[in-house]
Image (cartoon, rainbow, N blue to C red):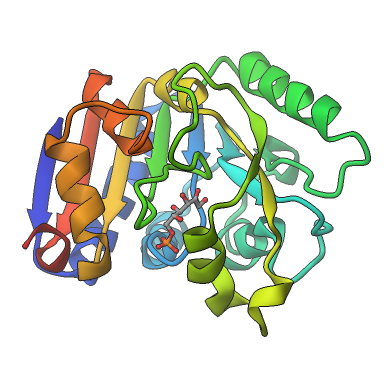
Length: 239
Ligand code: F6R
C-alpha cells in the first residue's frame, strides 16, 4: 500500500484528479470506478477543468459507481445519479450510455444487484477504483461485518452512516436506510485502487485501515490485501 501524505484537502483533490486524468489520457479504453460523498467533490472539479482545458475525448471512458440509495429515484436531488450528473457527467463530454450507477428504485432489488454485477463483468472489470472511507471504516456502503467475499448487494446502513449522511438531507428521517453497494470482493477485483482521505474525523478509521489486523469488523482493512492501492491522505487524517 502506497501512502501519499499531502498537506490538505485541496492538494489531495488535485493529486487525485491528476491520477485519474493520466489514466484517462494514457488508456485506449478505461473503466473507472467512481465514488460520491464529500471527499471526492473537489477532485471532480479539478478533473473537469483538466479534461475540458485539454479538450480530452472521452469516448473510450466507461464509469461505474460504487453505490446508490434504495428508494430514491434517479431524479431525486440527493440520489447519487443526480450527484454524478451535477458534479461530473453534465460537465464533460462523456457519453451518458457509458456511465453506470445502480438503480435504487428498481422494483426487484435482487434482480438489480445481479444486473449490476453483470454490467461490471461485461465492461471487463474496473481499471481504477476511486474510494472514500467512512468513519466506521466502511468502503462503498460495506458496513462493519460485511463478508469479504461479498459482491454487489443490498445493505442496511449503519446508524453512524445514516447520521453522517444526514447533512445532505433536510432531516435525518429523510436519509434512506438501505443502499445497493458493490461488495468488498467486487472492489478488490479492481486492477488498481485510489483511496482518498481528508479530515480528522477519518483519522481513526485510516490508522486502523493501515495497521489493524485485517478484519470484517473494519471493512477497509481488506485493502491491505490488494496489490495496487494508493492512499492520498491529508495532514489532518494522518496526524
Ligand atoms: C460513496 C461511498 C462512501 C463514502 C464514505 C465517505 O460513494 O461509497 O463509502 O466514500 O461514506 O463519505 P464522505 O466522503 O462524504 O465522508
